[in-house]
Image 1 (cartoon, rainbow, N blue to C red):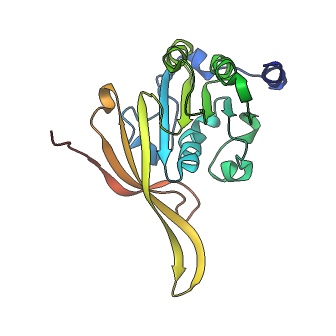
Image 2 (cartoon, rainbow, N blue to C red):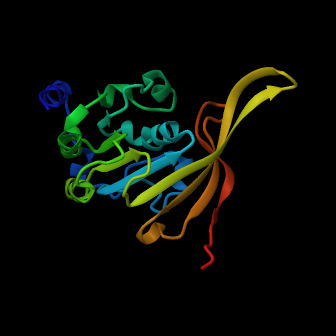
Length: 216
């Protein structure tokens, strides 16, 4: 916890964008078309799982990181270069690689101070409902990698790399099938295929979204 306090003290000009009460934080256009509110709503939790979950989560928060202070916790192998290539503003990013046994306290402190928190919590995080309530109270956005109790979920499958043909070439682009579901306005699942990355190194929509109608 002392280390977290020192990191917060060293962050120059730390100011929550949520103090201006935006109705949503920005995302790339591809996500606007599949998220129920065309952005990240302050006070919500988002779970990202499946193949390429870390890249998908980084891309999801990249636009918000241009305007808001962002924290990443529990990702000791996080590649900052890869994050930057996906659009993360490293000048506005604070990283806590491994909070060890202080997971709950560290995560709560970051939720209090940052607009966007990217976390890879242990499977058994204590008191998840209390944490979700804190996210709502503070107007933060918590994006968790892995399956978790969240307001919104993004689950990726069928990762396909492109670029190698007839035994030569380079892996340059990748498509992911992404299903978005959740509570309230997101109760009806949506499905889309995303380029992550596309030929220009960005995230873009490869296929129009569709609503998945569940048979009961």
